[in-house]
Length: 316
Image (cartoon, rainbow, N blue to C red; front, side):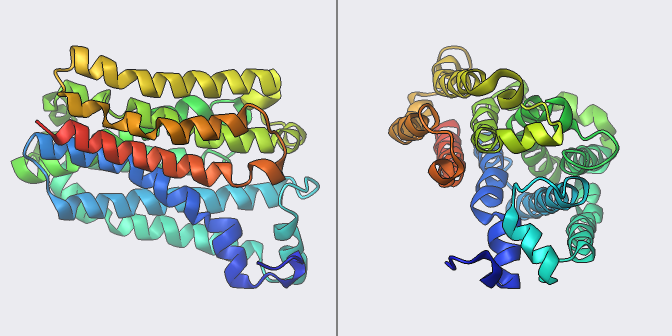
């Protein structure tokens, strides 16, 4: 890793500072794993539709990240949140045109999966894709980005804890049953518990964003973003992080008691030591240099938790 930001290559700029592979891949994959576990449980696992659906959702996710950085640099060039990107713009290593092209390519590639997914899932698959694309773009884009109004936490919770899980399950289920022509009414035929099993994963994915919000709270205040850290300070956002963590680790007990899950549903509790170590950092540290590695660790926590949850759901 180069000590001088001026020495960063274009490849380093795009991968390390824009793509954030340690964030985007684990958080995009986590709810998909839960959807796979549910599909295995119900005997509707279908690998190709699942993989194509995951590719589309990840492309939308990456496009949203690129758009977030584009809007940050365009709307708030005076905010030194990412000085390396500002320097890259000044040197020509990075351009606004390049960022816009990257956003367009991500969303176009995601759109190319549309005919296949719609052929399987019909209007429901189209609606899920549009909701995903809108949540990715309008996080920081459009006239009124929802992150600016403090809505990112609940939207991420719903998207990663419910929509992505249900979408993954649905496209596999529809491929098996051939219900593309049934329209949105087909959703009513899905098992009711698929809407709730992924909720703890949604909580842990939101926690990834909360760590970033702690680090960036001063920059977010300058941008006019009303994140929890800006509205409620360190005390408020740490309470939210702790509450979401407790919520995630209590829910397997609820699933066992009321959803008819076997004792395998407690597998995610194996990640508690990792969660505790991350909480130790979040509860005491607040500077970027101290928390910079906590976001990817929290991302991997959400992925590992989701993998164990998927196994727990699938096991009889």
